[in-house]
Amino acid sequence: MTTLEHARRGTTRHAWPAIVVGFLGSLILSIGSWSVGWVAPNSDINSTTWLAPFRTTELGVTIGTIMLTIGAWGMIWGWLRLGRVLRRPARTFKGKYEFPPESMRTINWAVGLWSLPQLFALTIFSRDMLAYLNQGRQVLAGQNPYELGISNLPNWFQLGTDTMWAEDATPYGPMFLWIEGAVVGITGVGQPDIAIFMFRLVSLLGVAMIIYYVPKLAEMQGWDPARAQWISAANPLFIISFVASGHNDSLMVGFMVAAIYAVWRGHGVLAVLMMSISIGMKVISIVLLPFIGLWWAGRNASKIKIFWYWCITLGLTAAIMLAVGWINGYGLDWVKVIAGTGSIWSWWSPIGAGGELLRVAVVELGLGDGEWVMPAVRLAGRLLSVVIVLVLMFAGTYDQILARATWSFAAIVVLSPVIHPWYLLWLLPLFVMLGIRSNWQLRWVIFTVAFFTAYGAGDQLYVWQFLELGGWMQALSWGLSVVLSIWVLYYDPWTSPMFKNQWHLRQSWRRMVLAYQRWKRSRTQAGR
View 1 (cartoon, rainbow, N blue to C red):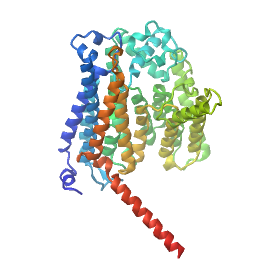
View 2 (cartoon, helix red, strand yellow; view 1 turned 45 degrees about the vertical axis):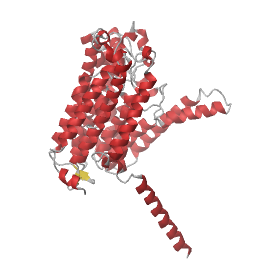
View 3 (cartoon, rainbow, N blue to C red; view 1 turned 120 degrees about the vertical axis):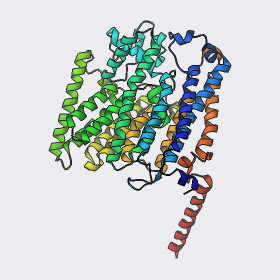
View 4 (tube, one colour; view 1 turned 90 degrees about the vertical axis):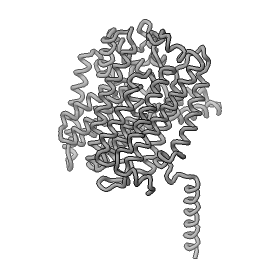
């Protein structure tokens, strides 16, 4: 262990420089968002005279892009340095490292301070909140968002919603539609910026639940709760996605982990209620419902008892969702979200990338237009994920239920045709409970968080078309991210050890040479 680590081990006072850097990064990112963040066309921000040069000139947009990107990497730097100065060799919990007992409060302070500036940022990394506005209008207008797209609303484009929602039904649960309608009902259509702020406050409820329950659940599994908090809640992708972007996924995950905690404490009915609310926010979490039934049935439960508790779990959830459907008038139309395979795909998805590459191959080989390929691959991925979930429902022990539930959820995500950056945050709390070790597992989390944070900074930039700078600004952001990633992840002495340990090319090459020499010796000895 280096002298630097000896000086920092087991202390929290050295964490404050990291917290300050992360806060400055969040603040700079938020200021940059006022230049290149998304805003509704009918927002008063568009007519703000003092802000116009920052949004409508080449120099202003360039400065905003640089600030947004540097701010994002400032948060990454603060996050990694915070983890480095707090960690010490494990004595109490499983794993190689743990954090001192008093560090939980320090990490919570970090999450709060890093989140604060982003409450007042313009919409960045995703403009789903602008879709929430029009879907809220649909609710208030008596339209069924599961049947109609937002193009059925007059002047729907004045709220800046992505055109992909024009004809598509909403993918959100029926309970979240109530929230959308309530927010728009309070603020009206003419105050989209206040509505965006309220959606962020709603998302903070999910953030608070994740921060409260995930460390408790990790500790129940024998893992350091403070370290779990640092991985799951202090990372920049979590804060940006659930605060600046205000995704309702925070509510889905928050009620999901609350359900797991309740059933582990023996409160089965409460767990089903929490799980039903999670489904009511975003339907994808329904995949965890059968595992709630397994936990509720208890250890050494017979197959008959397990089947009975599955029936109770499903019956209670169905009763709750039927009541919700009766109240809001949508019935069980939200089931279409599960049955539908969707129409979009992404390169980050094996199904999406594989389907597109196969389509191109079919066209190049002259076997047709290939329009059937993506739907077929998408359906195959959906069916395979269902098979995996069914197998994991029945195969495994009681002590493996958390792992079975986690990998079931992972199968649904990985075999989906589209994977958005914040989908990682569906799975990360579950894997944190299972235990993320300080080896390739933690490095994979760091790489994924850093990559998708950089991707969001470069991909989701709003630049007025008349400037003709959109492509240049994306290239500028990506170029900055490459330079900053090399520094933060590989060269900076405060942060690089969290990522690069034993990942040097020279070390990797030496390990390969030694492995080859051992293999050669074993073959020679075997030949004798």
